[in-house]
Amino acid sequence: MPKPKVIETLDAFKAEVRNNEKDAMLLMAKRWNAVERGLDAQIAALTQEIDALRAIDKLPTANQLYRMERYKTLLAQTQREVGQYERFAQGEIERGQREYFALGNDAAQAMLRDLTPAGVNINFNRLPVDAVNNMIGYCKDGAPLFSVLKERALYPDAIDGLTTQLVNAMALGFNPRKTARLMKDGLAQGLTKALVIARTEQLRAFREASFQNYNKNSDIVKGWVWHSALGTRTCAACYAMHGTIHPLDERLEDHPSGRCAMIPISKGWKELGYDVPDTNPTIPSGEEEFAKLDEQQQLGVLGKGRYELYKAGKLDFGKLATFTDDKVWGRSLRIAPLGDIGGKLPVPTTGLLYHPNKLDTENIIERNIDALKYATGHPREDAEKMLNDAVDKLQDVVNNNKLAVHSPPDAAKMILQDGRFKTQFETGTSKGKLSFTDRAIAAEKGLGIPQNVSNELRPIHGLVKEGKCNAMDYGKVQWVFKDTVRERTTVTFGNSLGGMHAGIQQGAPINKVNGAVFEGAGRIYDFVESGRIPKYIEIQIQGPVKLDDVAEILILKSQKGMPDADWVYNEAKRLGIPVNWVGNF
Ligand SMILES: [Zn+2]
Image (tube, rainbow, N blue to C red; front, side):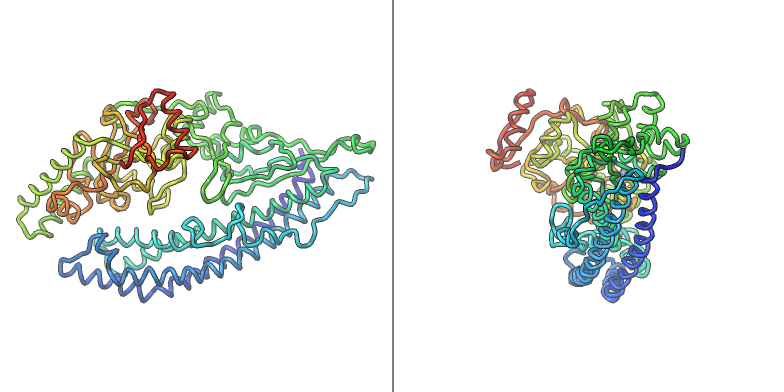
């Protein structure tokens, strides 16, 4: 079957978009080199100072690093350099938005002409020349492309990336040159974010031109069809949306970097007073298109869990797509979690599903003993005893305190609605430093969780709650768990992602803690020496965590009277989950 003309037209315009995009992305990547060059001297000075400290056995801990003058100077310089880059990127993206809007405008007009039958003469309305102006330089929510907010700035990502790499390189004892190179790799997280913003906002400009054109011609156009790229790299949600029909007043809300487009649907020509048949092309559904892929490609698009459902004929294809309100991107398309589309989570609800590698555990313990021996100047057996004492002390702390998770009231509402806790990979939210790929690597090294596991099968992260805790910025609602979750819970000491990522720290079953849960001598030493219970002991609960696992919900009194918090309180009451207002946690 030949391609309908309107699709050929769209494909041609999309090819042009991709071509322009390649050049633009290359230019943005090139300009990033200037950011790196601007930091060369500062990075070299810092890595050399750290190396000199290491040589005299004074390697700083992460916390000491954050207080070093050279580190602070580097951060300030990074902020300046990245700020200049933002101004450059702002100009580039604005230029792109104009260009893509113009292309989208031409594409929309061409597609409208494609739908017009031969012999019918229509002058389609065109957009005013300044139609583009109200979107140039802005994101979907009307916020500027870049601003001081964390979600809208490049330097927090750049600094996070750079610092994570630096801390890992320090732990692994890399030389200054290698450390500097890794820091620049980490710094490039700022560039990655800039490219995502560019792609997302420019492609949105293309769609906005479609939207406005179709609405400007509402006497002829009655709606639009969602059209995806349908390649092997198209995601399951875009496949599910492909071919769906939408009213004129709806915009296509794709995920970040999404390339889906809107094909116009005309009213029937008979209805419009012409004696000619309907010209709207038949667009096969995403499910029909998906069936044309080979098995390997299908598996690649769906992932294992969803593919198994599909093969068993148990996948409701349309449900693969869902929409969520993303903090940064607004209402966005997302792939539905396996648990929400009838997929059975193949997880036991007792016992640990994933175990860290035993050999690694032994190596890390050995390494920690070495590090302690080195740091204290005591013989090996003293160092070993010190580590064992720390383990005993930690075991006591975790045995005698509650396990909890914090969430903001709006997220708490969703947990009660969903009936289960979603993982950071599902919600796309996390306050940590690492990207999701890096998190998956860390979780494999530190917890034994395969990198390609479905997002909903990843652990839920929480903490050991002791007295007043400092985790309030993780949310004003606290969920306290029943002790029955302990048998499927692992524990790490301190904020562990960096250590797990570097392969120098691991989780241990919470019922049987071991010396691999500490990252380096500094942390063990601080813990044993001060005798203080640490502020942050992280837990990872494996398997689905459901409302059944909740012993009690606590909400800060300051939230009383706020709609979400009140809703959570009332709903918990209704469900019979103990719930209380508290002054603090
Ligand atoms: Zn997609």
